[in-house]
Length: 266
Image (cartoon, rainbow, N blue to C red):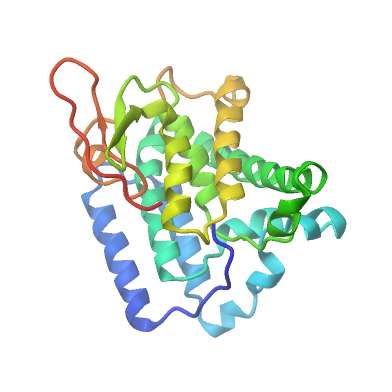
């Protein structure tokens, strides 16, 4: 989730984006249909030809703007903002991360439940972000202008939430910036690490994603329509070990030495 305006996709950048995502999809053990459809829709919205682009609201009208959601009741921003991206780099990292996480979570839940979970995480993470921004006005007024009037776009709040769900029962360890942490808590380290690497990223949006993931694990996951298997975490297998663009590979705490890779940008 970023706080800047969407740029026009160049032909070269767009072709590179599509080829890289297609190559990642080819190497995946699972080909989850809902995940692929979500990626396709977001790439299409980003690179839409003029006739279709005229039907898509500009970022200024669709971004997640807490003030306009609460004060002007522009609730459509809660949904639209997730599917629009600022530039090629932004959408590539988000869609690459979505492919990786979806290829693990969708087969475990089934496509129908996975779609419901994504919708739940999207709505809850964006509602939580709006609530946090409003809380800043009351309890931290020095940050009010920074967060209450922010204009955020992107799927990364949902991706943070998905990662919490995937890692919630993990017994493993993950390396972030050379520091080994329990995998179930690694999203908190990534929250800070990504903010250091990309100051323009939406800290509040990513935090809201983590909280939405925790809400799902502790509350919504108990509902029959959203219930997953006994162990959502899926950190094994060739693709899981070496292809997550938004986090490090996991490693078993014992037996044997730990294996890990460096954390990459979200």
